[in-house]
Length: 168
Image (tube, rainbow, N blue to C red; front, side, top):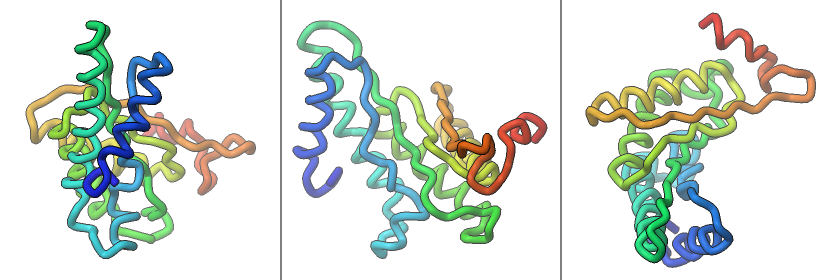
């Protein structure tokens, strides 16, 4: 939709800004190596990430221009369904694809990057390092926000305790 129907994506962002939010997330949760191969378009990670950020940026800028109140864009980096710990995809492949995702989001105008709902510490590491590598390649420093999924047992999906991330 970021490419074929940006008007729909723009209308969703506008609804959020109309409701009074200060920032929106890009429509790029699935613009990653895990999801795009399912549609035979894995080479479009950067393009679709950039397009999603551009739509959000344009909408945010329109609202800022109306009243002078700053609006921000969070570049969504979804985890996908490929877990490197379980061997679904090589760690380096995921890391490099997350880097493309981050570079596309920044090129499209994201103010910060948001790694969302990771469920495997190695997947989280691939996303964080990919994002950092993308920012470094562009010579930029932007906020990087990370969220993980924790089960009711207090562990991540694969059984890792979040404290393990602190020792890595």
